[in-house]
Amino acid sequence: MFEGRIAELLAKEMKGKGISKESILKLLEKPSRSELGDMAFPCFILAKKSRKNPAEIAKELAEKLNKKKPEDISKINAVKGYVNFFFNASLIAKGIIKRLLDEKDEFGSGKTGRNKKIVIDFSGPNIGKPMHIGHIRSTILGDSLLRIFDFQGYNVKGINYLGDIGLHIGKMIVAYELWLDKEALKDNPVDELLRLYIKFCDKEKIEYNEDFEEELQDNEWTNKAKEKLRLLELGDKKTTEIWHEIIRVSKEGFNEIYKILNVSFHEITGQSLFSEKGKQIIAQALKEGKAKLESDGAVYAEFQDLPKKYVLRSNGTASYITQDIGAAVERYRKYKFDRMIYVTDFRQEMHFRQLFALLKEWGYDFSDKLLHIGFGTINFGGEIMETRKGKIILLNDVLEKTIVKAKEEIKKRKTKGNAADIGVGAIKYAILKNAPAKDVNFSWEQALNFEGDSGPYLQYSHARACSILRKTDINKVNPKADFSVLDNPKEQALIKILSEFPETCKNASEQFSPNIIANYAYNLSKTFNDFYEACPVLKAGKEKEARLLLVAAVRQVLKNALNLLGIEAIEEM
Ligand code: ARG
Image 1: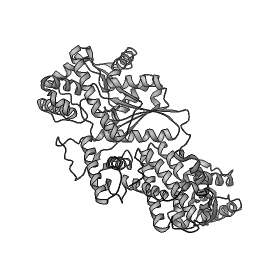
Image 2: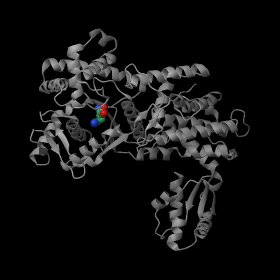
Image 3: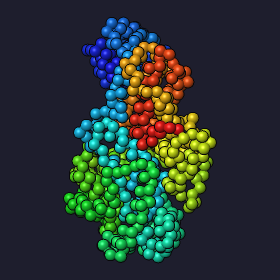
Image 4: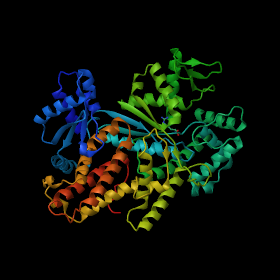
């Protein structure tokens, strides 16, 4: 928010010089050292324009600005071609504390999303297969994005698009009919389905694959699966019954995981629901000559700059993109969204580029509102993840292992706190602190390090603020306490970072980047702990009231930030 105010100030001063507020905003920098001020404006571009020396321009500007310096700026000076601005920390503290006390859980929220609707398609596990580590990233990322947009005032809709149809379903039905162990299904449904699946892959002589199904040609077993899929599309009774049973069991397994992760959706729909709609749209495109027919009966779309894409199989059955075509059109009809975001692994990038391009080609203008956010992989590095099934990394196993480790850590440190909250917080933070496009190098030691850049460290900082506040009655503290006594640099740093929260939330939404919030929360925690080491709170003298209010502010802002990440703000640890 300071950037905006300073840009305005500068724009006014330089009116008529052909430099807009927007371009000033882009030029503003945060000085590397706090002695140089809180914000700096470099004059080099201006110097080029006016052929003057930058140092001279900076000096002139600083002189003029000093004459109309607003209250919340304490000093403006010129150094080496930069105009430096120093904030009046006590005044800012006063403003921030007032806003925080008024707005509480809403502090940091914005209005950029007012009257706008965003749909986020995330998680999307595949029926019959266990959720794997790629789905966890989509689930955690999508959930956090949903929270971040909600906080900006958007009307948000989270959709879980279940992979309830496709070759994997055909395989599953064949395996279920041939080898099902009913007892095992009752005792441990997810494991039994996986066993069936792997057995099928063995027969096909391919390795179990977490996501994509290889369409083997002329493989006896693959053909059986394709045949089941055809029967299913024809509505065959027995096949449909088995399919429903597999969906039911799978969903139960997924729901357990969503419960642990505390993630929910506004809509849960299976891919299969959109086969018909997709086929209708494709038939229309074919009629209009926009889609093309292959000699074997398959239908495809061609692009200028992308590889051609089959949208319908030669036997007439729908494929992954057929349903995505139908689903996109249906969702736009239903939600009239301003934006729809798909959160998946990078490997699906081409799929979505082709989907958006063909929708546009076929006359669906809303395709401009579609966006794919691809994410990188999660590497477990040297720490081999031992799973019940060897090489496959299952979400259940990761969660279980993390919670066990969190328990150990709690015991070792003799701290309070619920192992599930800490373990889940650790995983969420380890994933969210990385920009979506980056790979995650996951390490348990780092994720659960209470002193490091980790979820538990943030939770611990929040609990620490709560514990300080528990020892006093914050409601009795005068909110208009004298903040001018806070002159320690650690206090000033804390005030500054607190004031940056609303801007940070806005940036995170504009850049689709929960990592901006995660990194902010980490810096805030660090700044808070530095402050706490340098400045006594409960035992302070004249600063006590102001410092208590700062601690209350930290508690609230950390809570709000953790909430945007979907991490539990633990009060006692
Ligand atoms: N089921 C897919 C997978 O496991 C993810 C679905 C993504 N959403 C979509 N509309 N295609 O990779």
